[in-house]
Length: 268
Image 1 (cartoon, rainbow, N blue to C red):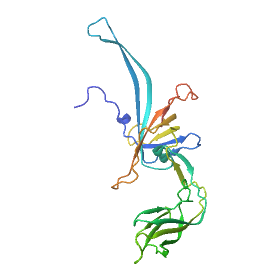
Image 2 (image 1 turned 120 degrees about the horizontal axis):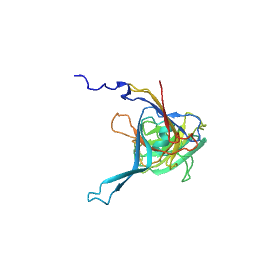
Image 3 (image 1 turned 180 degrees about the vertical axis):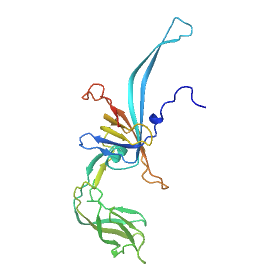
Image 4 (image 1 turned 135 degrees about the horizontal axis):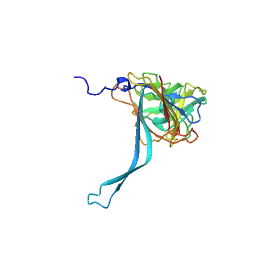
């Protein structure tokens, strides 16, 4: 049976897809989120005016104020942008000074415990990577790689897994190692956790919908805080881990009038 009135076109029905990124404050380019979904949200404060002239105190007026715009982004790529938001982190290139050969004397070590290799014996010495172990001994007796100990060269970790026959269980363990110099590179970063109370930037969304008008969305200034977004770093399964970040739109009055909270452009 046909509709009584002429139906609207399905052109404006929405099955969205697209890509979104943020130009972080201080940067000149937009970093894409990659595998991500975005939801726009809004809220306002409502106040009602009720008449005292009627027993029912009917509403005779309604005021709205404090209009707020927000976005929830669920993302899976832990690139620079993902790391910044997931950990509220300050991002920097990773650098490491070469560590000349040094020996760590540990005393007795329980089997299967890990030994972290660090730049020095100082309490605030940084963890090192790209390490080379030149000797591991127990009570002065040399231990063999993969028979008595494991070495994660990339991660800078050692694990004692067995002692030679006749070696006392409380024999003192010593690990001698070096670490290579690592120069700053755009391909290797470091995230300093919980250094930013807020991460700000300019958000750009470009739709590529299955159905519906494609639009470009620009939010000149958006701020992400650390109130949400748990990050699962080890999981019991094979699902792609996703992180949620909630951003609040901040009015940017340097924009032309009417554009301060953001705008869309139909791409036709």
